[in-house]
Image (cartoon, rainbow, N blue to C red; front, side):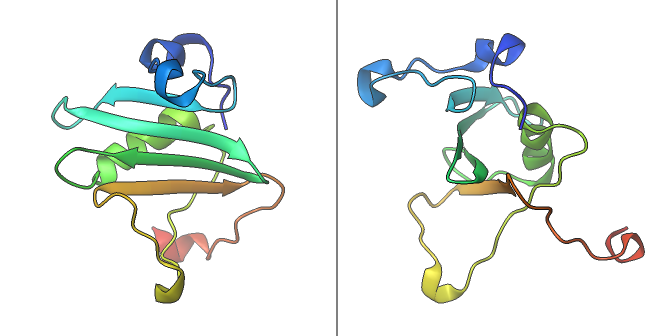
Amino acid sequence: MKPLSGTINRHRLNVARTMGWNGDDTCGCFRFPSPIDGQPLLIQVSAENGWDHVSVSRAKRCPNWPEMDFVKQQFFKDDEVVMQLHVARTDHINVHPFCLHLWRPQNAAIPLPPGWMVG
């Protein structure tokens, strides 16, 4: 994951009053305008327990592919592979109806199918 400092900080939300602090170089809350319609993308970022995690939500619908790709570009390096997971139904938890997540294990490579299968 990219460090959460520098120019990305202009999108950092001040959540100290409700969360106790505003995060650091590995975590925080951000608001970016959608590249599709300019509406807010609310983003929470963390890097703990061996995982980089980015959650992305909108007020009235789930983020779409171009928005998730935009967020991936903001928070992850170009050569990093990240994933969205569809867990087993018994492990499914829905805290917010319009939220999607990006995940990356910090100490393992994500297995990928051959390139010709994903093109």
